[in-house]
Image (cartoon, rainbow, N blue to C red):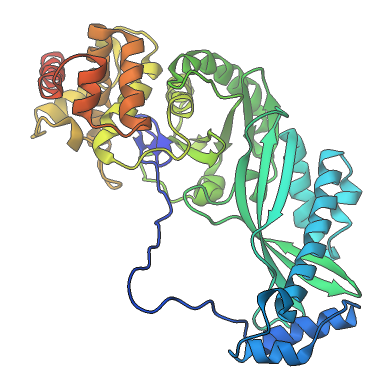
Length: 446
């Protein structure tokens, strides 16, 4: 079973698009930008004075920090000081990026204080094992003083990155960095792991990795599970040839990235916290990429091929940020289950027993109510995936794969209603098609 919040496989749940909420202010007094606290601004200015940064006027700073208007934003000493400090930090990050891409481990570590180097050494090794080809850090705003740690600063950074393929559309990760001034030079104290939803900490941020690279896939796991890599890579390469057929936009992923998680890694990679029945999931990481994670603890060797086809189909078929409408769950998971079945006869689908249990156990006959709860029993989850598979299978048998992919694109990518999409793609009313799909499911269930 897989979870897809991101997207999962089957039994899997694909959840999905979790866009950041837009904050809209209407009416009332306009919100004021909070000024830096006086002690923070003074600390920054004094630190930069000590480093020889010119043009810092304490009088102007005190006026602005106390809430009184400054002479103008361009002349604000605190803002100017922050910008200059931020520029020095980003220059250090640029040097580090050049060293990373140039294979210079010593240069990569040179911008950091000794305490930060063990973590950075592990990151460097993991990124190189993944064959990093693009690494572009950019500051998000200006440095902020770390409360309770005089002389320390925090700078939020967004990194654009690619693996294996130099010309890919980069994925992105948001991380926090902490710094200390040593003389005139900002020195890196720590790189925090990403906590941004929906992706959370990437495996290469928090774990040692062993990696195998193929023509269409990259498979990574922990050193303890290294022996699994040759077999996993062969299975992933085979699954990729199937998943490529379901790239609904017409563009296949440049590489499918698959992480094979041990017990501890399953709880930590990408934030952990998946439903207990999940065997794998796909999660959007930007740039049109979906990273795939498999749960080593819940997989048997016989189930890996189906699961890989399922999850890689999510990576090929889903939009960048997944999807948010759980009423479409049956279609997203049904397509992935259809790919996972890889053309086998319906009678050999392994979830038919769970389908029968669900159909005869009080299911209301609505496809839009199939998505299982996080704490659902295994047979309820398996039955839901199976019903989704059978509904998609019926549509494919009736209209062919390409028209079903067009329908999927209209519903999941273009956010069209099922009624509009069915009318456009199939020339049929969705209410009638829905009932036909359910009748087919009930007939198969017997």
